Amino acid sequence: MKVSLITLGCRSNAFDTELMANYFKSKGYEVVNYQEQADIYIINTCTVTSEADRSSRQAIHRAKRKNPKALVVATGCYAQINPQALSSMQDVDMVVGNSHKHRIVELVEEFLQDKGENIFVDNIFRQSRLESFDLITFFEKARPFIKVQEGCNRFCTFCVIPYARGKVRSVPPEKVIKEVKLLAQKGFQEVVLTGTQLTQYGWDMGTSLYELLRGLIEIKGIELIRLSSMHPSEIGGELLELITSEEKIAPHFHISLQSGSDRILKLMEREYTVSDYVRIVDKIISKRPISAIGTDIIVGFPTETEEDFEQTYGLLEELPIAYMHVFPYSDRPFTKASKMEGKVSPRAKDERVSKLKELDKRKREGFYKESLGKELRATVVEMGKLLTENYLQLEVEGFTEIGKVVRIRL
Image 1 (cartoon, rainbow, N blue to C red):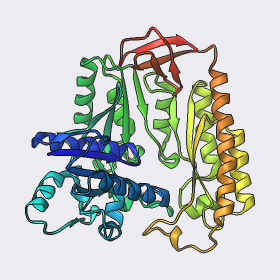
Image 2: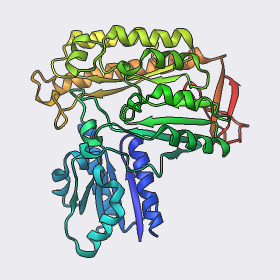
Image 3: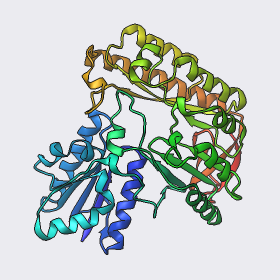
Image 4: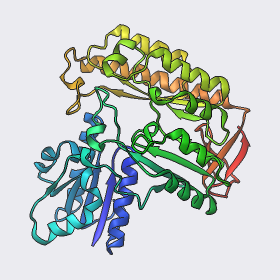
């Protein structure tokens, strides 16, 4: 039978899709591209925003239109958070939450045999270990992504992810180090560490991201270790000192701000202030001037005034930000913010998003211009395509050693 898997959302979902595809392949299924007609469609959904919910539903409808007789399975975060909403859709045959992804082949086969139960979702907080220790690496072109942890122990008032992904479960450091050593032996020179909340790595086993990085930078053959998104309040003094002094750690740091208003940050329960964030950015840029600082911003959080927004805009305008991801606030199930009064109108949110996206465009262009003339390390991700250590995507002929780190002058 042919199986097609469709991923929405973050790299954690991309990893999970790879994991599920391997499960199906090991059982003799043929995994095909979404463009081909399949007998089974696995839709790995996202629910981080209401727009993500909508995109997930659209992907489900498209799959059923491709083959009305196919089995359509909704899995992922939307499935974990709101299984009833998905199961009520005419085009959905099965709902499998994140709690049951590791059993997806078994559940699909049982369903095909007797068409019995079609919703498989359990309390994700009961899981105390990662169910995917057998595979912690997935690839984005020539870059291996190492998934070192899952889940989040923080409950920011706007965020549904802890309810979808559960509490922190980390991959043992010795397994991560062994995996990276094998990748180095295969010739890969850049690795990317990723997870639901990377800076919470090791919270469940008495270690930390700082300790893991100290082990990884000793591995011969690895030239760049790139970090995924980090929470400002979890970047302690030791970690900040390490990432600003160790050349093997790529000078590309995605540090989510969410708001430039201390009042809004307090309502979000982010546990840092604007001055805390500025201090981290200033330290990084002063020690490693070529660094790309990326960030996430939510506009229209409940009670956000024009003054709050102007504080955010002004801060971002002043900070040496290389790029930003901008999202309009939307209520998410189970969250405190969804029950708050003072909702911002859709029109105001759209206007604020538009202003910040225009600023983002200027920031990106400015960062490229500032990088001209500088000597940088870059990973050859495809024939003629490079990704610099500070996250600039380049098209340059003549580079053919995919996976290697080269030096260039921009």
